[in-house]
Length: 351
Image 1: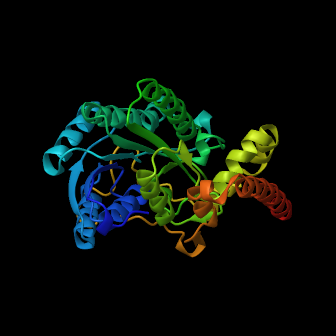
Image 2: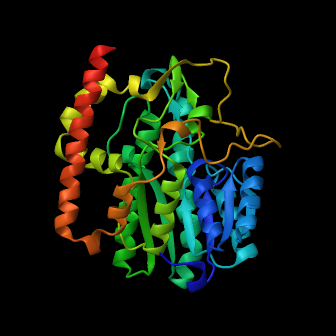
Image 3: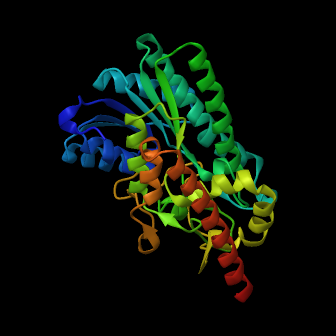
């Protein structure tokens, strides 16, 4: 990976930068001395993120923006270029969700998730391309999810939006190839991550929501995003063995996964602690917009989250390792998936 001493600082725009994956990615770019435009709704989270970047040696500008509004997104892009110059990297990471059976989600809630999680990526990509096309240069990174390939119960709006991002991005990529464009679009399909979303997502589950284990720290996601920015010609990256296992499992045995998730997908997304019915959520309004409400990058699952991922190294070094090793890793991931399914079934049988 490039270092600060061997490359010039770049202008990077990150949506969803006030917390979670976006926040961790902002720190990672800032530590390299990059100029980072932080885009999100939460003013408190953005302000603290900007301080972290400045302290690390980068430059930052917080821009309060609701990505569901294309005019606000375009204005944020213009402000970023006014502050730091031409945009080199645009990272789409903002999202929201509702944890609930589809039958209990209202049309307004479903629309809101779609507007932020899907259309927010579309509007961000539009704003980035409008500024990258005249220079015929730049990189757009879509922060995806293993759930963009294999949907799970209780997250129909989020999964639908992430699937939509896959389809939209594939179409755009072919258009750029047709034009022989030097603009690159790549995706980073994330595993389950320890981010604050599980503390502020709208939920109708009886118990507190949780990421489906295994859980990884958001810094793993951040490292993958920075690597993708440096190596954008790859179509996508899969950090975390659970991402590889989920995507490969969906390709090899989708019907089996349907039945498995129907049995275990509800319990695996909830802790043993009862939910707080009065807990506020961030679906329509941010929860980090006032002083003292910054949530940072990490959620409440630090004790259960992995800080390293061997699969990430393999994903980033697939060509040097060679096709044989990559094939072996794919088989290992599929085998891990099957073992994990069987172990989970056995645990469920004893509950």
